Length: 598
Image 1 (cartoon, rainbow, N blue to C red):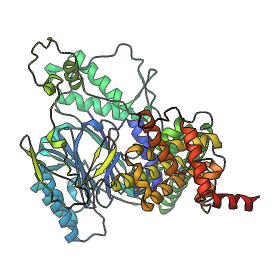
Image 2: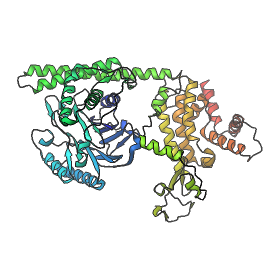
Image 3: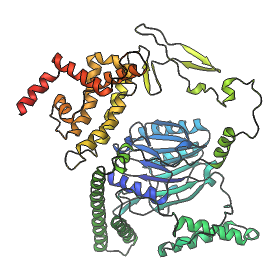
Image 4: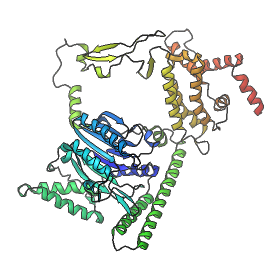
């Protein structure tokens, strides 16, 4: 039963920071975001529309996503059997543009012909989802909802947008009629999230009906009861009891219902109930968020009372603004202090938390459902011994040809050959200009241009990420920096014996030098004005061209292509650098610079 969080973050970085903590606090699986921060959503875990106005983040269960798509103003994913949309329409767009958006979105919804969740900031007002009156956009959206057999889940009790004395209901959650009974616990939360929009939480379950009786954990140590949530606990108990018929109210069912509601409203005592916070979170920020949420609710109540004076409203607004700004500054300060500690820890644990954060290599648990685990186990350990040896080799290994993943390419060299189509198991496959095989990008001309381009791009991304923990001041030592730089060099040198011949072309050599320069300048803590040659000498790093040739030479030695197999890589590198020095192409310039420095 995935948990979903829907929010408009107004492109505020602090709102993204608070979103990360809310995801961990509430154990969220899917995040639907409108107006995300464009730099943050460049992360591969985010799916965005064409203009980066809407985004979907799959926090857990990314194996459930089997298809994705996007257009201008919306993005969608197929999560198991449900298609989930994230949408955003600017309030500054005209009616024609709004109608065009609804037309494109409706066409996508109708093409799916299945269960859909359409959520986001539509900037439309209608009494159906809580507004006091309809506007033109609201009427257009209501007609569109009827045409596409959708229903609004908004209850209209709490505004989704609050700024000062104004509030509105513009963040909408729409579902198809066959999904209405599968959305559980839809609610708007007024907790502080560093944006004017409120968080919307709900859960998606397959078949909604009377909640099944769950097994009671006799070893549970209970819950941490919070007084402010007792009213919600009472209301949910009464709501559940009204759903059940008198004959079905067994002690087991009532106990199971109470346990289920307590699990959702209260934190468990002991055990492993404590979730891991984001790296910069601390108790002080938690208390400040609680205080900011309290003042936000006070402001909402003061603005809603008819008897409130203007002085009371001004005072409540001022208190909330001061508390919010203090929380924002505390988050920035805590992130900086936490990051400084992480950078200092690189000296002691080079592959620790800092390296994992910048390279985004924190592994997530593989949460496969039980039926998939059982199916895979039965394939690995069949119940009956396979005695029929007449099967084809591919079937004996329980393998199947996947024509939908099959690619084809014509290695034509410089000749111009038209693309052809190949039929595999009834599926037509058109040849492409390039494909990726075992990490190597192969183009039809075998020029390796595509591979060099992609390799340099990947190396620059890695270098930029590592630069965050290799600061010029108060960073790790030179030895640790050089070890970290090996990550970028290993990316560049991957499969070098295959494509090393292309380095004779100046264009490709310059691309590789540019990628290497980004990391060697951080090894020696140099400014950007330093020359590449000087940076290589000071950092003690061989030029990338020599490293590539050394790698290819070493591979040929191991394969027996040359007689000098016992020569080590270091001797070969020294020999090549000495030869390079005698030829006077690089070291003359280095010697002159060093003499000038002396």
